[in-house]
Image (cartoon, rainbow, N blue to C red; front, side, top):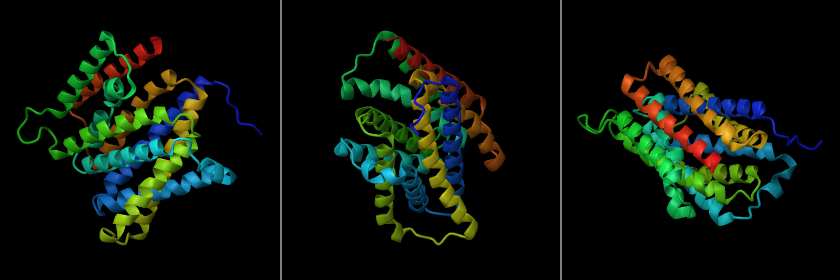
Length: 289
């Protein structure tokens, strides 16, 4: 039976909400596991088991899907995702989940800025206003005027670097749209699994039985999140589903409070409001362009 490719906006929104739940579940598991295991080992599990999820999703089409029309760009895209994942995982060791999620909301702002030199896009005055609003929100969240390295120390630096890497990853995603989405999933997961596997012997600590389940869970949550994201964008236009990515802040706040006892302060909520507002404004300008 051929897949149903008809537009269904409600279905697309529900897939996006499920995507964000999976990604925050992944972040929660990673933050918890990093209390006992190395960054390399936890990141390896995330990519290795996501690769297995991708292979299962491809099924009998694996040989066909594994061939890319843009192999060099897929490999570079994979490098950016590996860098994003490593920096983000390093950041959430010390930064609350909701705050880390808020900083990553800078993605549409950074993509707008980087699209100028990398894609040759023109950005008008109104979209620049959205960019400035987003950066102002980031300053409020980070609070560099506080003593030390701002509100959350070096963890914030890792997260800001992760946001820049993620913006480059998103831009390269635009350039490989000729590939099957599952091809992109396989490349990023397999490349991350390969690189971290080479480093793993120096950082390996044998997990406890329950922790094995959590390590597998990181890959399953990450793999399913990407598969659900594919379905979301196949079901409805990006301009409809993309704003619902901000639902991740709700899950990050709930999980952060229940599991780690973290609750965002007023500064974080204010910065989040500005960053989300700027992102929604940029989405609306792109939609009307």
